[in-house]
Length: 291
Image (cartoon, rainbow, N blue to C red):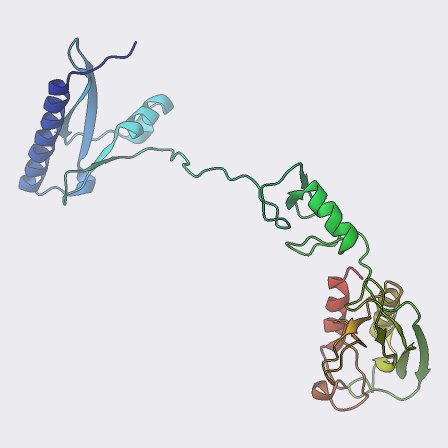
C-alpha cells in the first residue's frame, strides 16, 4: 500500500538532506580527506509520518570487498553515494548500469520505412521488408544492398549477340618474360543492335564494337581467363551506356572489369608491365560473385 507524504514532511526531509550534505562537506574539508578516502552509508527509516527518509553520516571505516557475500556486496554497491565538492548534487553509483537506449524498430534500407514482414538474409543478417528484398533480388540483382554480399548469380545486361574467342602466341608480355609460355589474346565482338528493357534507352540502337585484351599464358593468367569466360556467360563484361574515352552515348562499354587492352605502355596505357593487375582483376570479378 503506497503512502503519501504531507508537503511539510517532504520539505523537512529535503532541508535535512541539504543540511547533512553541508555538514559532511565541511567535516571532510576540515579533516583534509580526499574523495576516495570517504564513503557515505545510507540508511532507510520507516515511521508512521516519514516514508523512506534518507539520512547520511560520514564514516572512516572501510570494509574489505572480498569479505562480503555476493548479496551484501551487491547491496553495498547500490548504496554508495558520491558527493561533488563543487555542488550539492549527489549521484548514486550502481554496479550494473541500466540501458536507457530505446530499442529501435528495424528499418528497411530499400523503402526507408519500418520493416513489414521482416526478412533476414542468411549470410550477412541484414533485415528488409520481405516484398522489398524479394523484388530487389528479382529486378535488380541478388546482392545485399547494404554490404553487397552476393546471393546466387548476378547477371548483367551485356548484349546477348556477342562472342568471345581465345588464341595464344609465344610472345611473352613485359613483366612475364620468365614465368609464362607466351600471351593469351581475348577478342570480344558485338554487332550493332537495339537496346532492350534492361538498357538505358530501350528501342534505340547501339553501336557494336570489337575489343581485344591480353593475359600472360601461365597458371594465374589461365585462371583469370576461366573467370572472364564465366563473367561473359553471365553478361557482366560489357554494358551499354556512355563511353568514358569518347563521351558517346548508346555504345558498348566495359562494365568495371578492367582488361589490359595493350601489350606495352604500363598502367597508364592499360598495358604491361603491371605487377598487381592479376590480383586486382580477380578482386573485381569476386565483387560480381565470380571466384
